[in-house]
Length: 626
Image 1: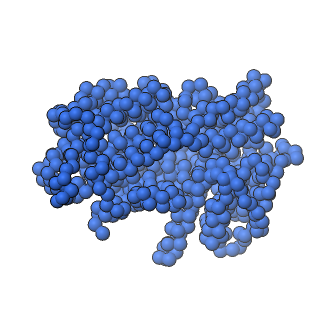
Image 2: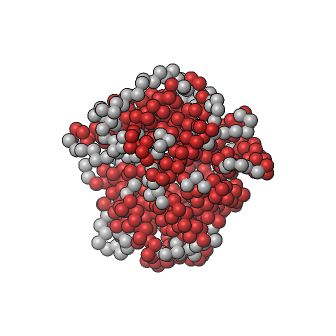
C-alpha cells in the first residue's frame, strides 16, 4: 500500500460534485500568490504579537482578490466569534467566511467533461489553482464549525456535517495533487505540502480519538483515520519551519497534548518534551504572545505546578485587552488552578467574573459559583442568598447545540435540583467537579495536593452524622481515587466496591455506579488483572440513564486501548515499564443495575499487587488519617 492509500483508507470519491457550480462571477486576476503568502505570514506575526486588529486589517485589504487574504480575514473573524460567543460576532464571521469561500471558489480549477473522460492531470493546474483547492478545504472547515453556533438546531448540525465531509474530500484531492503533480516549476510547494499534511494530520488525529461506535458510523459514510498517520503528518508540518502553516501545527500539537490527552484520561501520553520544545521556540519568537503564554500556563498546570500556572495565566490575560473572550478562557483556567489548591475564596473571584462577563455557558458558570459556596465555611447571609439564587437560575440557563442539550449543563441542572430538594445542601460539589473534569490527573502530579484533597474528604466524613447512602457513595468514590493515586490499591478497591454494593440505593446521582465501575476496572488493569478489567468495562458500557454518559464512553475507549496495548506488549515479550496514574470521565441513559460486587480481589501477597511501589503501611506513615 503506497503513502497516499495509507492516509486515505476509504473508497475513492468523485470531487466533481464539489466543483464550483455556485461560484459568483468571473475569476479575478487578484494579486500574486507570492505576495499573498508574504502578507499572510506578516499577518500571522502581527496576530501572535497581540496586534489582532492590525492582522485583520492587513488581510481585509485584498480579501476579495487573494485566496490567502480571504482565508486570513475569515480566520481572524472566526477566532473572534468563538472567543466572544457574541451573536453579532458569530453572524459577522459567518458572512465573512461565506464571502471568503466565494472568493476562493473563483480561483479553483473547474472540472469539465474532459476531466471525466480522461482523468485529471494535475500538471495542467496552475500553482494558484492548486493552493486554492487547499484553502477552500480550510475555509469550509471553519464555516462548518461556525454553522452550529449560528443556529443551534439539528438542521445546522447536519449542514455542518456536510461541510466537514466536503472539506475532507477537498483535502483528499490535495493529497493526490501533492503526490502526483510535477513540482519542479513551482515556487511554493513547501506551503502547499505543509497545509495538506496539516489538514490530513488533523483529520486523522481527531477522528482516531472517537469511540468505536462513532468511528464505525464515520467509516460507513466515508471517513477513515489512524492516530499514527495523524501524528506523523502533523509533525512533518511542524518540522518544516519555513512553512506558512507551521504555527497552526504547533497550536494543534499543544492543544492535543495539553488538553485532549488530559481530558480523555490519557495524561501519560502527553509528549512533554515536544511541548517544551514548541513553547521555548514560540515564546522566544513571541515573548508577550497571549496564546503561547496561556499554553505555558496550561503546561505548568498539568505538571501539578498550579501556583506557577496561575502566574502564567495572569501574564497571558494582561498581555492583551482587545479580546475579552480570550481573557475569559484564562479566567476559566485560573478558577481550576484555585480548585486544585482548594483556595475557594480565590476561585469565587474567577467564577464571579465568568458569571458576569462570559457567554460561553452561563449555566455551568452559575453552578460552579454556587458549588464553591458549598465548600466555603461560614458563608455570610448575603452569600447564602446568592447561592440559592444561582442554583435556582441554573435550569433556566440551559443551551442547546444541534437540537440537543449540552451534557455538562444537564448534569449541573440535576445537581441544582438536588440542592433544592435537600434543603439547600450539596456534599463537596466543587470537589466532585474536580473528579468529573479529570482533575485527578493534575492532583497526582503533586502529593501535597492529593493529600490535602484526601484530608478534606476525611474531615467531611468525620463531621457528618447519619450520612445519606448517596453521599457516602460519593465520598467513597472520591476517597478511592485518592487512595489509588497515593499507591494504596487494597483500600481503594474496598472503597470502590462499597459504592457498587449500594447501587440500588442510588436514585439521583446515577453516574456514581458506572463511573466507579470504570475506576475499579482501571485499578485492576494497573494490577495486570486484565480479564476482570475488561469484564467491568463491558458492563459499564451497557449502562444507560445517567449524566455525562458520552464522557465516560471516551474513558472506556481510552482504557480499552491501554489494555490492548498491554496485551500486545505481553505477546511480543516487551516489559510494561509502568502504569498511568490517573483516569476520569463520564456517561448517560435507564440504569439496569443489579450489581452484586465480589469481595476485594487484590491480595497483598499476590503477583498483581506487588507492582505498587507503596504498601498500606507506607501510606499510613505519610497520612495517619488512612
